[in-house]
Image (cartoon, helix red, strand yellow):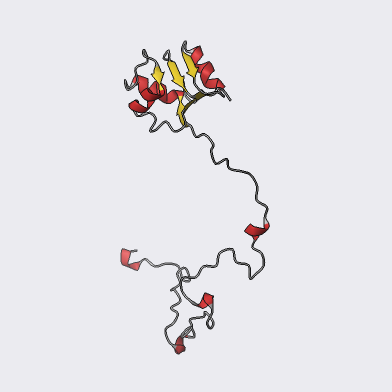
Length: 157
């Protein structure tokens, strides 16, 4: 067998239907779209339209509530803080404040504060001063011999 002898199985490929190519093709003039109306025109997508019946997305009840003034915290994992300390971007000897985390590039911006989560291992003795922290993060830092000072009113959730 040679490359020029390669062929697909019979019936495996089908050429596309060319519409609007004259009356002899059986798909000329209106190209199978019928006559007039919105759907005979190009660029029409009537998503969710159910022929005048109330669409499903409108029949279903609205649920939940999004608080417009909710607080949004920048999230930092302990493992990442440890990584930055090992890389020399953060000094573990000095207190680690939110400004230090932003300056080191670990957090892009403070938002409404920085919240520490316990993902990853921490071995360095940290002195953290942040807005919030999870219970497990506080335990992990204290287990490593460090401390966390929280500025938020609702400290650990």
